[in-house]
Length: 394
Ligand code: VNL
Image (cartoon, rainbow, N blue to C red; front, side):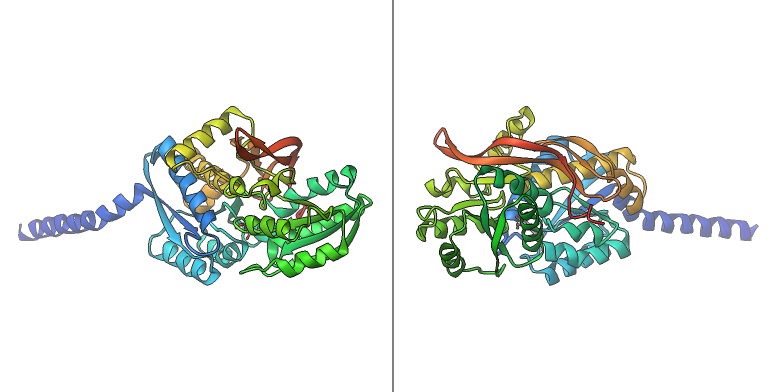
């Protein structure tokens, strides 16, 4: 009679111990963690500020309980140093056991984290970085920003048809700049224009002056520029200071240069600059008007830029994947639910190509105009459903 009691006691104890152990695990189970790694300080800080603000706006508008799980956003500052990005991603995967990694302000950061996403089977939602090859660095990458080939080609079709027969390109000397140079220049040549020179300027602490002087001497019809978000105002200022516009050289660029985060402070020199890009805060849709209003209200009047929209849509992709999998399943299940999503974004209709995991979207031609005392990228044409040309070469 002794034994069963003891055994029952032992069983009860074991059950209690198990329950005790299980309690925190259960709590964990009801939390869905998003590790958002961004440059919140340093040269790319505006990108981090824009994306974090957009992610928080999305959560404020859509709640933080999805499919019965509490969504927790963990924001980490990598100061845009890829070694930091990698270290933080490691900590988030191993320590925090995040369900998703997101953010990635610049290409080197995304490239540093891609192998960790693969090893740990953690979906990596790239919200900013825009070199074509990033989606090929890991099968767990999904992109909601854009690619430079995608943004550049439309401008290279527009320019020769609008008086630009000779061009010099000037790009930041790393992934996205090299993509922009390659695809813009090749398309210009294909369209019968002449590329006089291809210039590359260091990505960190660039001094544009000597390059602009060189462009002045070469006297092309236009200068084509790509620099990452945050560096456009400096280019614009030095372009004016060197009297390039007065020398009859037109500035054309990807929309990274007439970045909505800075555009309004650039002054008259920006007027008339034609760019191609996937998002303008002036995009005339109801959804975008609501997005811009809500973003500005929540952020002391800050105007959202293309980084913000990448962050906002990235959160949408994560939320909908969680919903459609009903909160069950690990990285691979979640990843599959991100592929093929199609929806209206503040930028227009977009989808995540199920094969490439890259974004397909309209690319707009825009011209800087003053309206109600403010500078805007006003869209005047659109190329529909552009797939990344960087991937169709194979
Ligand atoms: C990148 C591309 C970064 C475009 C950017 O801004 C940008 C990148 C920080 O892939 O590093 O506008």
